[in-house]
Image (cartoon, rainbow, N blue to C red):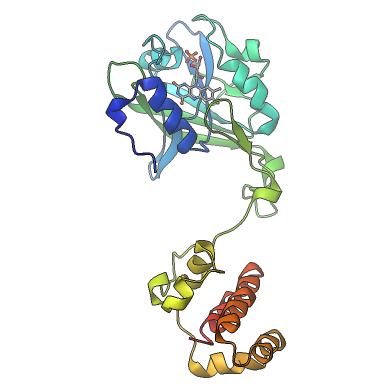
Length: 297
Ligand SMILES: Cc1cc2nc3c(=O)[nH]c(=O)nc-3n(C[C@H](O)[C@H](O)[C@H](O)COP(=O)(O)O)c2cc1C
């Protein structure tokens, strides 16, 4: 494994490793305005939400690694403590990238990138009409992280109004993760798109207290067949099945088939049971999968 002291790297080398590893990052497409009324629009992927009460996002227009200059977005916010955070989806991604061009101060990237300005209701900077979600924010704090090239400037933006396009909502009025078509930034020029085929769910262990991977027998934890994801699903179950429940599953046709075919062949029996459990996990039948792996231990 490559182990590197961050202090041994130049800011550009460090930025490269970090941007490829800390990815994908959501994109904040920030609209700001200076005290003379000049509008600016720029994307920032050093961005996330950090609190829902108060509803707070942070993004970071950093000092340029190349020449240590600061970004117009930061300069504008120092003058007018408001912004709109527009969320970027796939149909907007090429124009969003174009808006990141270093146009001179006073140049409105809405015009350069071909986006439509939509008046905000609470703040002066306009919204991006094309964005599926637009959030009007008041900047509550600016934290400068240094004076050297690459130093971030954290903009703490409290969300006051959220505008959501109806077309991305489901029947319950919630945002449909498959419809919003989000994109995210990775290292270099790489982006990724959240497509319905790429979405998957992981059951939240919020209300449950999983037995934990450490509760599984050694032969299961060290299985050649079961992966870390498989063990994670098993460990998320709330209780061990009883001996009776395990025995009841022995008559399940697929289990019976494995047991009958491996009489006197302990090694193959365990492997085949683990393979069957893996199939059950893939089908979401986690409880039976746990019974199957506990059958021959
Ligand atoms: C998708 C994307 C994400 C970006 N994220 C950041 C970021 O988090 N921080 C940053 O300083 N620059 C980031 N940039 C570069 C800025 O958008 C770029 O420097 C821009 O010219 C700044 O504009 P401004 O000077 O008008 O504020 C990003 C560029 C793109 C295309």
